[in-house]
Amino acid sequence: NKTINVIGAGLAGCEAAYQIAKRGIKVRLYEMKPQKYSPAHHSENFAELVCSNSLRSDQLENAVGLLKEELRIMDSLILRAADATRVPAGGALAVDREGFSEYVTKAVRDNENIEIIYGEQDSIPDDNITVIATGPLTSESMFTYIRKIIGDDYLYFFDAAAPIVSYESINMDKAFKAARYGKGSEDYINCPMNREEYEIFYNELVSAELAEVKSFEKNMVFEGCMPIESMAQRGKDTMRYGPLKPVGLMDPRKEAKPYAVVQLRQDNKNATLYNIVGFQTHLKWPEQKRVFSLIPGLENAEFVRYGVMHRNTYINSPKLLDCTYKLKSSDNIYFAGQITGVEGYIESTASGFVAGINAAARSLDREGIVFPANTSIGALSNYISDAGVKNFQPMNVNFGLFSNVDTSIRDKRKRNSLIAQKSIEIVVNINKMF
Ligand code: FAD
Image 1 (cartoon, protein in one colour):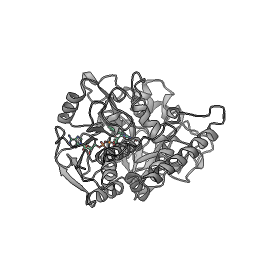
Image 2 (image 1 turned 60 degrees about the vertical axis):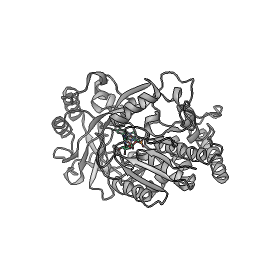
Image 3 (image 1 turned 135 degrees about the vertical axis):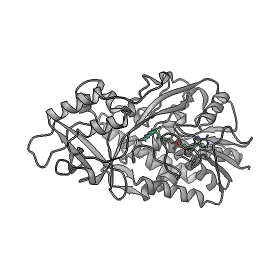
């Protein structure tokens, strides 16, 4: 077995490198940081979380919670790092972002089978098996190279990142701590608005000045990470049914339910930073300060990081990849992470995991490992490689992607719980076979 190349030390690349190395194969892991940064990356460390510090639900009745559990069973490095650095976030798994990246970086650096090579790659380095995991913000030279090897099946769209404010600058005389429906005690900081405050905020938001968008990028809004101003444009009350919904939150100082609530989620272990939940945006930075400071409690907020908007690149996987994330037209090239059209931190990790174990199996001349579509790892790889999918869109894992679902069970929670139970059994068995 020869050395395997992994390009990109993000969530998918680190998971893939770890899984390959664990199987006794040497890995060369290529990373362009710190020599070059994408518009969203800032830290020298690997597996950087570019936006939210939440890895979403940790409940088994939720497909992403199940995906986490499956990855834990399969000894995922990313899940181990997340569990070791978690911060309170109700039913979700949120992490201290610095601690998380440091954990992964150390594990990868200390692994004797992994050699790290710094610098931007503009192609695949040699004929060895290679996993391309350069992410949704793949550098331009690599992007051009990938387009060359796969043809013109490229797609683009936008994502946006939410601003972060310092805790000490939040006016806690107006804001209050609580989690929706009392789950997770006081995990969120809530900024309640009355009707008048909401309307002022809404009017300023929809008329605020946006950062420049290149012409070919216009009208490319992704529903899963929609900028708050685009959501507001859809209607006066849309935000009140989305991230600003007031349900399950009572202002302890007032008897009436708030008209709208902006939530802030803890962003680091020391609870000195909070991100504004759902406020991905591409407003100009001075406009973010002006408009978001209209939120009660944030009138003097210090913005330690403004929201930004980015290109997000992914390939037309159903045409190009098989369910092990291998390029159908090559025996040596795998893709992993968001670039395959899986959407989200954990989904990117899962694809890195599958690509990694299968790249290792190929190198060892062993049979590949295909997870069945009634596990969440398998449901996801099935989706991205399903040649029948038309108009391929990036996708978070969800129970709709599973096969063999017993729809006669009407109670959704019960049904999901049964799916989870079965799925875990399967994954435990697959793990035993390794
Ligand atoms: P990345 O984590 O981006 O890793 C790719 C790595 O490859 C980087 O370290 C990069 O420096 C390196 N690289 C790139 N090009 C080269 C090259 N030519 N040579 C060498 N190295 C290279 N998902 C969520 O679940 N929650 C969120 O809140 C969220 N917010 C997002 C916000 C933005 C702005 C974007 C773009 C995406 C967001 N996502 C979010 C989606 C996705 O989960 C993340 O992008 C995730 O980090 C993808 O993991 P990855 O491993 O595919 O890529």
